[in-house]
Image (tube, rainbow, N blue to C red; front, side, top):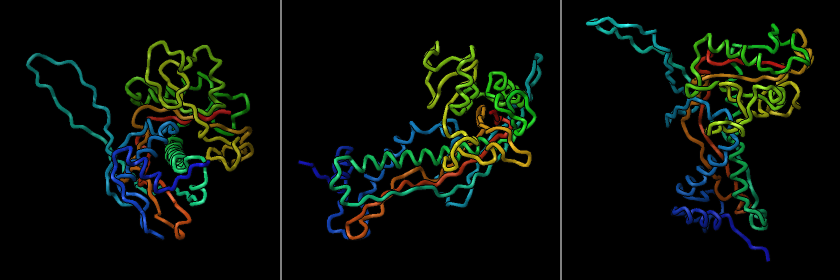
Length: 338
């Protein structure tokens, strides 16, 4: 016989296991809330946990949290410049000092979120754990929204390198694939700009699977599973070439994807542009430390809409307030290939 779960009992059971005091909703017919602040905190953390394996760009973002900043207002992120070069010292010579210099970046925070509703009939009659499934889907959606926004920021840099040293996008042809030589051209730009490496060791390069396939056959490529020394792999990491570590994601913008795909960008499609593109174009991006950032006013949390439609419907949402922005344009390079 099928075992039934009410949404109330599901929350009580999970929250009790976590040591949380629960406020029940008996007697409610419309409005109110399904669970207490403690239970909401438990499920908010679960959304974050479910989102982490999906996230790619956020793991490399410079983070700042300033609670309570209202949507539409800004959070200041201070980034520091490199010190002026020191030198040799003479006996009894006083060492001169220099003031730290930097720039203040203002990032505007905005509301973000998405909601889903489940009927009481579905919750009562389903064999599946509907609320667990809902939390997973909300977590994935939160991760996608955050990553797409950070991707757009990362690709907004003005330093651009084209495959095979082509001069512009519409000069690219179908044979202009991503190669080690093009990666080195981009690194040359970063090194010339004195961009700091991530963790003082690596360049980070985001690529589409179509682009990474072109790199994997190169003799310089090392699969992540074959690293000689044990390293903590980044989420989505597939391999490295010298001191560049590659993160693969289908979110990288291109002109080949279908129009409804979040990775589709019309300007990259074959035939688009004032001077038409000869081929569909794919974008990659390589960067060091402090290239882009996230300013958070309210970390992601689970919200419920209470008991709706006289107990016939239950709605849940993820909600957060954040903003993103480019911190150092010179610390990143966009790469365009066929």
